Image 1 (cartoon, rainbow, N blue to C red):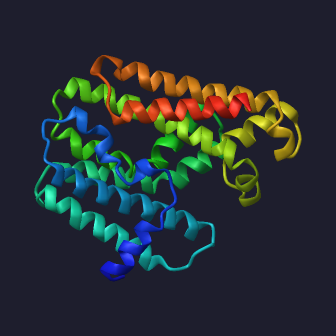
Image 2: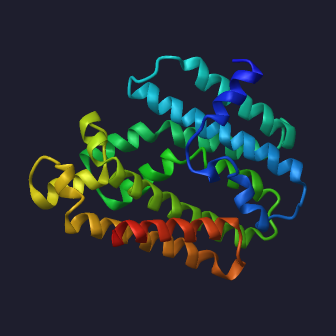
Length: 249
């Protein structure tokens, strides 16, 4: 993939805008105002996000071109290397994130066999492991490591909330693809029938799960409330308001 093709691929992304500027959401919490670092980390994060999206499509047999994922992965490493040299301790975090992401299918199979909230949390965190690279990178520039620990815990709550929201949104699609979905699991446990999307979105279960998403977002906000407002706190508030509107409608 040449540079123009890569640029077109990233520009065509219709995902939520914060995926384009993931590192910048946390700029408030670090000790540098170097805009160049954030531009580089934002682009690296966007490449990693797109890589994950293409891998998902490959695993769903909707795409067969593995080279796109490899090119995006390589581009992200080249960008990250501009900020962190090859011997920097950041790369230990990067390898750890890659290892966790590579185990997502293992966690999915375990959830299918032994569904529990703890297993589901591990699955959600593994699926979002490459997003955590932005926090791992910025933690090396953090103002306070104790505060950064709170931020990482908050981010895990956000990841859980986003995964649960996504499971509700993809209720029908995940059932048809035979992918583990917590909303599907809760539906079959509660109603003892094949998942029915029309019934699910009218059910008390759907409302209950949306309230669980709001509770997770509220927990994410509470953890970092002492740290002050940032683009990340704004994103959490906007997400929570969007979920609330879904409930009200």
